[in-house]
Image 1 (cartoon, rainbow, N blue to C red):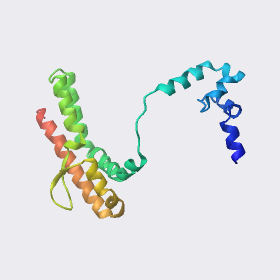
Image 2: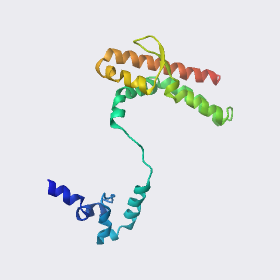
Image 3: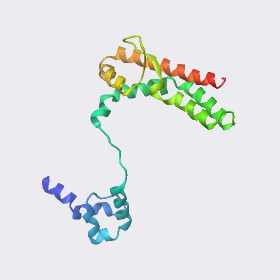
Image 4: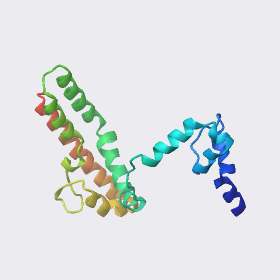
Length: 175
């Protein structure tokens, strides 16, 4: 197994990626020093672009710390509240496309519809009005996974909060 891994990572083993029917970027730049690599200057150029491309920082640990919260939040606010969301979006885009609201007003209302930090809902545990922050998502993530009744009450609270904000935008648009 170690010999195979060493070979597949070598310039010789990387040649397979150069084949036109596979056409993938290799991970070992030395493959471009081989005769086959010299014929794939297009791939070499793309490979070199990846070396200077901007990247994003990603933490699996951070993502997993609120994965279930985020999944259920989007389910509640986009899937369960879909009808109210559609009505608000339709009214908003219609007003904008008809020139009845400015681009600035359009963007402000888009932010009202979509910004999770502006979604106010009642926490089912405390009864307090809160917003969906990263910290809140992390705090409830474990409980959402383990307690279906709690999850359902939170989904209901998120859905109600979403529907309220969608109606608020609709009212601002006069609909």
